[in-house]
Image 1 (cartoon, rainbow, N blue to C red):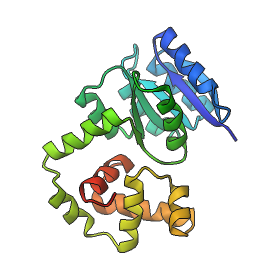
Image 2: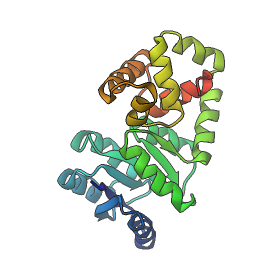
Image 3: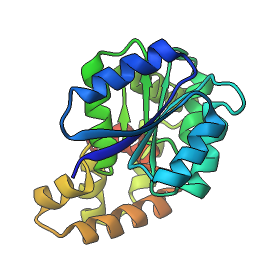
Length: 215
């Protein structure tokens, strides 16, 4: 079954470009397009897409606020923030809001396709430029390698195995195949890992895995 995607961007030309890229993949189906955040929320409520691509700077309701609303009205929809702005505060706000991916509009078009598939499969995706910023910010916030190792020390051996694969960007299904366990068990492990680490989402857990040397 094709991955259902909703695209929200107030620039018609940019939106058309994103739609063209997505149309090149037979495994992706665009179920709606929005020109502002409010319209994106309403369309997501109606269509319940697998993935929502949100521009950050939009009228009526910006992408960050829309992502927060989507967590309530369409909790199963995974959000990828798509923007020309690479400022660290936007990245931090998007991740705190539960975004599963973050892409700069200047990214290689192939990254967009990869991101949609990864996020739909339950993984997190950050473009390399964004990942570099996020990791640097966590270092600046005193999340050192020593601190990260101390935090992951509370995990069981199996949970550390799972966390290492989360850090490598694998989906739950890929982790299940790699560790020869069922996907439901992986989901339970990931939930336990997030709880023990105090991580809000897989992205934060993946960063800790990186800092702790698990990936």
